[in-house]
Length: 363
Image 1 (cartoon, helix red, strand yellow):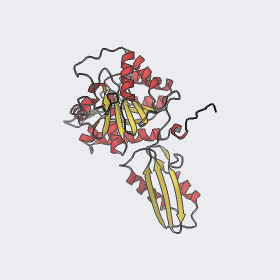
Image 2 (image 1 turned 30 degrees about the vertical axis):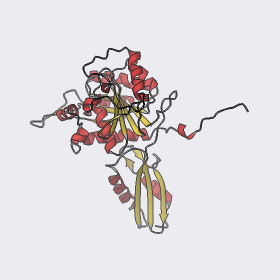
Image 3 (image 1 turned 60 degrees about the vertical axis):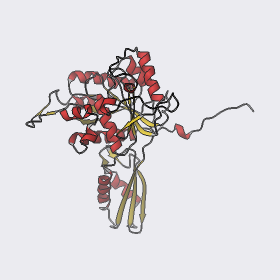
Image 4 (image 1 turned 120 degrees about the vertical axis):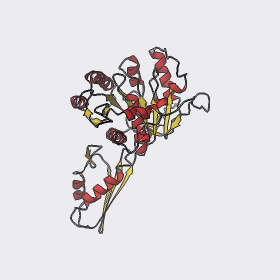
């Protein structure tokens, strides 16, 4: 092992493609140290995305790969996770207490955007991240129901909200502040102002990710929010149906115009599986999400089935990822969450905290 060259280790690691990053660990700058001493090879890996359920598999696969090197000896791979803050729009500053904001959007309603937001947040938490949700759908807040929460949030000073917590997820929503039967008849500026207050006056506790469930559509409110909220990346939710894809395309274009990177697409209701006979049928068509992803050069993060249980779990306040954590839909959500976070991990980091403020004084 002493005769083994570091370059040989690096060249072998370049052949291993991380399924979430979709690139090799050397190119992703995830290999932090390679130590060759006597008859032992030690490799230290640092992932930039949460992957608790994948770490043991990754460790085993890398150790098996490296054991094929000439020289024999012992191989030891250690893996850690360090989630960094990533760059936001150039005109905005990152939010205090939040490393990364990920916007979950759709061009139209009814495609399962809120359900996706909640389950992806829970999936990120299950993979080891600290996560929050901002329910930005002022006119139709559904996050409280999906997380089984109600009542007004606490406040320490009468100004800042303490987020309500469910399943380890910090949340804030206009739904906690108004009567469920009250109609929100607000014009755009009022809705935008309320959202800004919820975002900036909530005491988020050093979150790795804050998921924002945006209202459906691409109108003035959505564009204003995309311009005023410091977002690290966005995910577009659609169904395979042509009319949903048309609207999803508009949502994607909106984020591109305000320089927010698209982390990928999620295709909901891609396939219906009959609960009685097991027959599979693409009720809303098929291949639409994949075609849209290819057209826009973004990744299709995953496709979810049209499953009655997903809706029932969300309505009951125990979403799929916690209600049926070992079921196939929950596993798909976790896979999507890992890929989404991995795509963000490859983006440029935010270094603003490293630089002190420069103050010029007359002496």
